[in-house]
Amino acid sequence: MAKKSVMISGVNTSELKVLSNEEMTELFKEYQKTHDTNVKQKLINGNLKLVLSVLRKYTNRTDNLDDLFQVGVIGLIKAIENFDLSFGLKLSTYACPMIMGEIRRCLRDNNMLRVSRSLKDMAYKVLQMREYLTNKLGYVPSYEEIAKQLGINEIDAVIAVESTYEPVSMYTPIYNDGGDTIYLYEQLEDKGTSNDIGNKMALQNAINKLTKREQSILNDRYIIGKTQSEISEELGISQAQVSRIESGAIKTLKKVLK
Image (cartoon, rainbow, N blue to C red; front, side, top):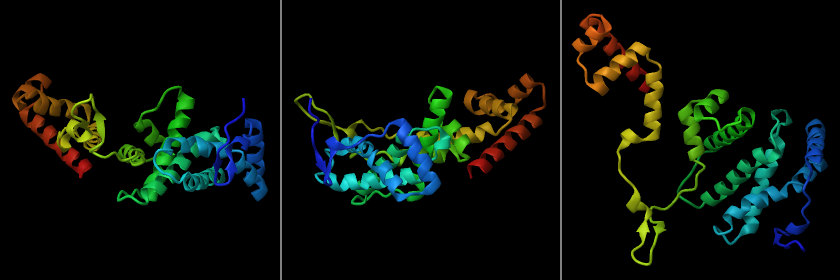
């Protein structure tokens, strides 16, 4: 069966060479030792199908696939220049997010939404670490585990990854049974800032810094609704002690959340 031939930026996609893992490893060893531009070009040419695989997600977004292909190649080149064999990852694991990031940046350049380069770089690192830990641990790690490995704040990790998501119009139709169309904005609930994931995570992180006794007293006072007298009787301490522990815990929370 003949391969389908498509020309993008003067490249016949049916004739693209795909490097084997062994060829890739040898070329990377040589490139990282010599920085030979010819070796680098072989790595680029041997991985152009990675760009095409990412580009398939955007075929309905623009008529100029040539431009997006070239932008995607820039992401591939950056990945090749910074790839480290010692991590034990496949190039595709590292390169695809970078290729996707370059394409998204290009598409967003004409939009009002802007995502800083530092935030996108952090997102790449988070995605890389998630893939690395998934392979190592055998399960998808939590943001807390990823953030700990990278030495960053868990909330920053979440925000960085969410910044790479494509924006969706509130007026996007989500259902139509032949009658009235239901739009996305009609299904959105205004639950207030208290349910915001960032606020929840910040509060939980602050609570985790309290002692078990402090957590227990705050839970009894503000969740269950017990009085300080009731708590003092249960714990066998004075009401004044309960009051001091409660006040100290609240001060700690305010300090951490400030």
